[in-house]
Length: 170
Image (cartoon, rainbow, N blue to C red):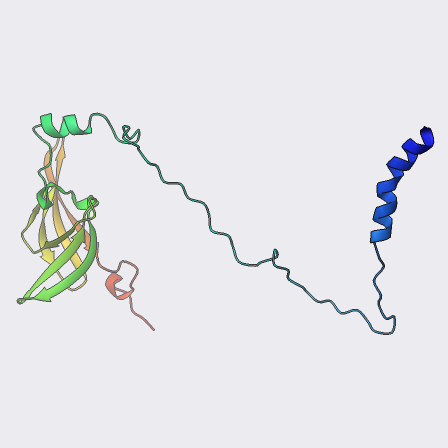
């Protein structure tokens, strides 16, 4: 009985030893280092898995519950459109020159595009100058103890460009 048990234990080892065959290499040729890529060894990066939050009819937990209430019941709520946007919220996309006047194209936080000319009002200021590569705003700051103050805000079209910063290229 012990011999049968030992034979059954050693049987897989014996069959494995028969399957392993030594490679036939000629000894007079030197072995070259060659990188062989198999199908599973790819150098391309795998695409990262992204997940998208789907509400499925439920309330979005990332949006405040008081947002709609405050927008309706606050007398200082910003008006819709361009007049309700703050200067820090908009992004300068392009400056156009037509009808002998510069016009600036901005994108708001709602991903809508707005075409602005000099003199137009925003929620916290107004456009005072549009040049070839910049737009100047007059921002109205309301301080609690000091009252109202004004500040000039400049948004450049290409902030990384050396010529727009007063530098020169060599």
